[in-house]
Length: 465
View 1 (tube, one colour):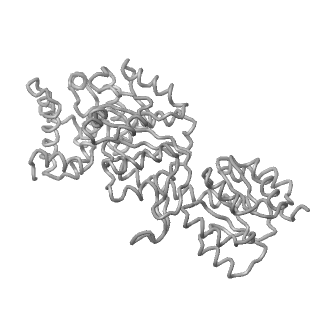
View 2 (cartoon, one colour; view 1 turned 45 degrees about the horizontal axis):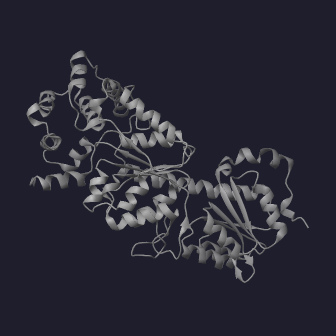
View 3 (cartoon, one colour; view 1 turned 135 degrees about the horizontal axis):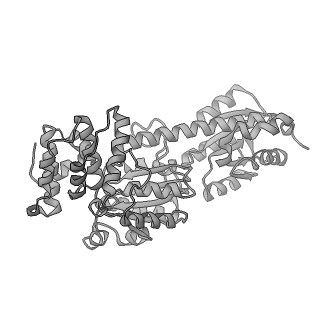
């Protein structure tokens, strides 16, 4: 017998898909022992959603949850052997952080309160119409999207080192960068992992973003994780999430960056700086495609593409025992080496002009003409800090209102008598520190590196202030 809730007006059928556009990318699991209700829910959702699976009991449902990620679980409160609320509590303890919509034929206050306490996102009373179901799902998807976007934004503000200007595409037409673009375009449609190598500031994150934008995952999140910037004691929670009450201060369950990247791309930037203990966890995640939130009883499946970058020689890191050989061979499916800015010819002029336009808009400042003298300097200077150094040089010029008189100082850094890159780097960082009066936080911002990196460098140079 067809349930009442299967009745749907012609207007709902005509306009429903347009009213809930997020449904098309959603994955939904239905758990209900009543065949009629199960059939109605499948018929209502399968044409509108990316994935819809149905289970007649909790055992079958848990098998589905083991096999793949679901955005939403719709569960009847009356199930054989266990209530939907009790089963929901079990799943939360197990680490399943999907949104749950509880459906029931009994509208008592205790059930509603119990559902909310257990962590249900919504509560539907039978019989309900198709548009009520779609509206509840849409609310869940919208809340989930906002949570994800807020988490990614907070992470980007604290972690991403790529300049906002032009960061989503590789700029330039030199032979060196064109070869890199061609290789990225070739590998982007494939699921393979990619390792970007190159000097600091050469554009590895920009290249990774370009790869993501060209892939089938472009409509899903791209999340960069700076392995050198995340404290080792927090990285488990940052990556995998945690359950409520797992540790002091964990007042609610939270998803990690891996879960927020579901369907998209995760970049492990400066992967060589990942501690050895966490390298093992990364290897297991890559092999099993599963994660275990901190405090969870079991692992949950993930669908994420992994990309890696480093400015270090990983073969040397493996030889000296600071990087696992099995992880190196796992991530080095395809290596894409980013060229130095100094080897990209006239690309420096195109990049400088682009930074001038973009930063001028961001800062609300009038762009400065790049005359022949500056063009000649831009092309002759060695740019040890690569694209990031160029970006910061243009930004300082805009703030000052002219290309700085420190030009001669910058030129002195490429003096043939100081050809060692380490010496050039040391002199440049110390010069910026002098400009900021020893303010390492400001110096890190100007240089486009982390405060932690400056602290480490100064310690190695015995510089205390």
